Image (cartoon, rainbow, N blue to C red):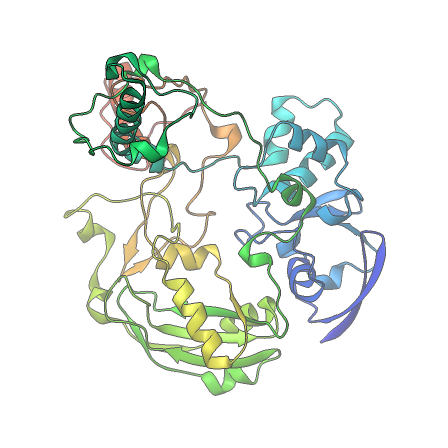
Length: 453
């Protein structure tokens, strides 16, 4: 452990930290500056971008020992009141969506405009990095069901109005939210399948555009996400799972790990027997995230690998076609695991997983162009070979093709959502065949003799 003097946002800070501790974790865990985010943890995604002497750098791979005499600027120090021109522009056009990476995007944009005041697309793509977003099928899947649920209520309101005014129901219609709710409640409930629904041509846009309510907090780096929270006495945990799905720990060098710097506890999690439940593994709890990450590198586990240890991609691909995006934490068992660890150590706990944890321990699914052109998950002796986005890449801005989007306005709810993504894997090879006569049978396409410019 060493003493380091850092200049951050114009103020001097003294911290006690290992020399190899990345600046990211100094900021987040020791100084509680949470605007700089943890993403892949490999210096690739850019979520941890900040300025070092005015230049954008990835703080997740910048060791604290290299920062003496340097000026560090985070999103919290970009402006006093969130009134930097870039922050104002982001807010005015409502850029944030989930918003997690927007602080880093702003820092990258500020650095770019300092060196190139009027950048072209060629300048922007490499400077700003990956730009993508997931969708949701909630609205698309439930729109018709909601219409069928609402239509009987509308009909009851119309019946109430007709009875009150002594006129035929056909002369009444519901509009602008003005209703006779108390009388309508006494009306018989119509069959939802028998009530006529509006035709799509009769749809109206209701309400008004409302920007994100948390935009200002996102653009100024205020604590907002679960990973940003700090509680008195909080400890920081990581977990390790068997590299083979279905495996469980038999033993581990827990006594050795407990003696490592910053480590508070280490223990085996027995987990559940069902695949969707809490997976068995080993938990390490420490004073900060970097201490937990570092201790995990020294962890040695003897695994019972179970029946999946003899599986490989070559045999698996003969049985089923699969692929797609990593993780998305579709199984929320990490919440239960964090609660279990907190109960064991008797303190609030923040459990952090990196992208390798997700890639090796969560659900894989199709992810549109990236999966079709670039991504492939392979198994060897029951283990997923790919480790992070260096060998499981996402499509970047400067790799993307120009795409014309046509939104289907047929009988269903018009719009786009995630169910469109898997279809891409078939649509692109079909288009290639139609254009060239070449049949594409394997994924990803980058492993064939095809390429695009």
